[in-house]
Image (cartoon, rainbow, N blue to C red; front, side, top):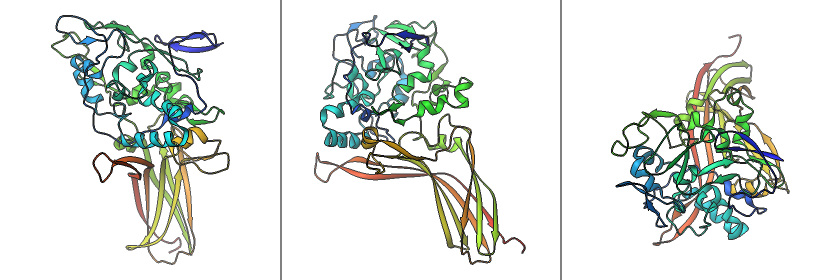
Length: 429
């Protein structure tokens, strides 16, 4: 027996092997569908689904009662939500260059059949309908409106299919007592729960190694203990209308911010981490510098995600404008394959990771003081600078020289998170 959480947030016991919604067959390389995305892409030109549709009211958009409804249809009523969502990483989960590069690497390495599993989170409407060739526009919409609002339960213990879906006329969401003239509305406490996000943001390899543990990091934190969910930070309520005035006037005056920002929002990252130069010692030709880094505003490790995401603390000693010495201290997780080789590509980590060599990331609410030593320092005056950078090393798909040609290129993104500096003098002088 095991448990799953349904749309009302209730944990229910279910039999192993019990029938579920149509899903995907489990394969040994299932892990590659969790490829992490950091780059933006051009928004898609969306159009309503062309499958069987029925009018839901005079002058109202047509909701597809037999399959997926395009986000363009949703946007006819939910204008403000759609306007924000369509420029989000979720909306561009299929189209962005970083994912496309990793997806092509997965196809080349593991074959097209296994690489299809990437789509179950980056184009998740394939879970119902099987459009693995991405011929339908709704599939290319990435993590589209109708997918999330067709989820009625998640089962984090099911290796084959974590989502339970009801695709059609009913839409599941967190608003109580909501009614719509265009479709059925089902209240869902699940949509306010971190378990909803965990279905794509938590993954163990078939051998049991946790390689994507954002949900587990949150669950072990003080945030989970006090009831702060993923959505509280990543989908905050802001002033706005859920539905346009022309459709419905009695609608809440607050709306969830559907850009679901994460590490690509550098201002959010900067607000979550604090850097302090807390002291130094300078005795003869030896210098010790003490720097404190605090993860004060993130409900998971800093940084979270796969090993491509890392933070690096750089401590530099200068005499005037001349650099005397420099040290780098990474905050990262390093994963190895069975041969002991470090893995630095998304598709490799999610399939080939065999063990964790080290994990120096900073846990939620952890304040870590790092001491850095320098030898053979010959100077009379010194200045010390501590800089914290967020780095993401990956690949992206870019246009080639010829029309219609594309190629994969390496790319490293580096963002300044925080900096602190101070002058120094030798003790005893």
